[in-house]
Amino acid sequence: MSPAADKIAEESPTTDFWRSLRYFNLYRLFLASLFVVLAGVFGESLSLGEMDRSMFFNASVIYAVLVVISFVPLQMRWPRFTWQLAGQIGSDIVGLSVLSHASGGIQNNVILLMLVSLAAAGLISRGRITLFFASLASIAALLEHSYAVIYNDADAAKYLQVGLLCMSYFAVAWLAHTLAKYAVDSQELAQRRGRDLVNLSEANRMVMRDMQDGVLVVDGQGMIMQMNQSAARLLRHSAAPGSLLAENFPLLFGQYAFWKQTGSSNHGSLLLDAGMQARLRFFAIERDANRGTVIFLEDMQRVRAEAQQIKLAALGRLTANIAHEVRNPLSAISYATELLQEELGDADEQRLLKIVMDNTQRINRIVQDVMQLNRRDRAQPEAMELNSMLHAFMEEFNLAERLSPDIVVLNDVPNVEIPFDRGHLRQVLWNLCRNALRYGRRTQGSLRLSASMDHGQVFLDVQDDGPGIPEENQGKLFEPFFTTAIDGTGLGLYIAKELCEANGAQLDLVVRGGQKGACFQITFGELKENVGE
Image (cartoon, rainbow, N blue to C red; front, side):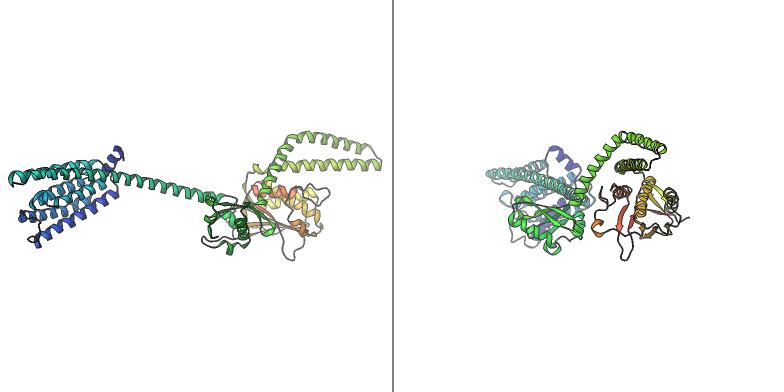
């Protein structure tokens, strides 16, 4: 430890310092009690106090009383730690020196117990103050022997033994200080590593939680150690840590076992439910598959959707840049065609002009649809009342399509507010209703709009009475540019789904047993019920 660290430790001791000092005081209490018992019961049969048994017994009692009293400031933690430690070591130096003198001086082994106190002081204080205690103990030993030489005719040649004892005091004090320094450094390193491991574990948990790819960590025996939410979503259920991969996901375990046997490639594929596919990647931990493996599951449908989204976004930006270049010639062609239709009366020429006009309008619709591809990021949801919005839309739609009021039917709608961009919702409903009219019978009730609530969710259904959608086409409905109509662009349903997702909603094809026609359902996001109306 540095001097600054020593100063901090002395001025602001932690609970560990006080706990160590308490244990040291318990040792002192045991030692003092042992001296009192030995002096009071076995005093005559032992060499303890052979020079002055009365002095030894009295010193033992006083030493024990001082140790008991020292528990009071220790409990109060006042005065500060350094002063209490100095008081305890000082009382040990004085007490053991008196007990050693009463037992015959240096030739008695009582004074060797001072080594234990100095070692304890070095470990507890963790600072260089231990050398100061060693100096006091050495001075006490020299004074005790000098007193014995002067007044008790002790052997002066014993100064050599006293000097060696003093050297051992300093050696033990320095060794205790060095060991304490290494212990503190090791403790600080362990604490730093512990904090780093906690932070790393938390970061690993957050990364695994937010990853779109599925992640499983298995040990060498195929036991699942970790699994994130994306993996549970792709594999359709989660598995508890400690369960076997083979029991929970046998198909994935087969790919894993094949990779462990061959080891030639870390790529594979796994067929999921509903025709989806996941790309597998295996990575051995510490380059040893027997010590564990990390398995990544990449949703290929999401990868294709992201690539398609990037492509369509680029197409949308390109279309926005050239839209006026395309629309200006289309406007000129349409205007010229309308003039020619008014002037010419020949039926064949009129038919040809109508073809020109129809194709001009079709090109214009394609440009408009493609321009919708870059509207997803400009959603501005607002709270709107669903019932009034649907009634306003029905009036506008019937007027624009020249429909009788009984063709489009609006069932009871719950009195709720939905968060949605008004223009986006109008576009979505317009696309869905036009598709329904195209394939419906255009009779009474051919197009039905109905809304319902279930567990706080609002669902809006757009139902027609047409032939329905063939099963082989149901998985392709929301793909861009997919259409079965000769004059369609294949972007209507794709744009509708994108606009719904931009507003926190979901558009799906709903297939119910026994239903006629096609039904598209919008599941709205967080809503607010108008309970006051």
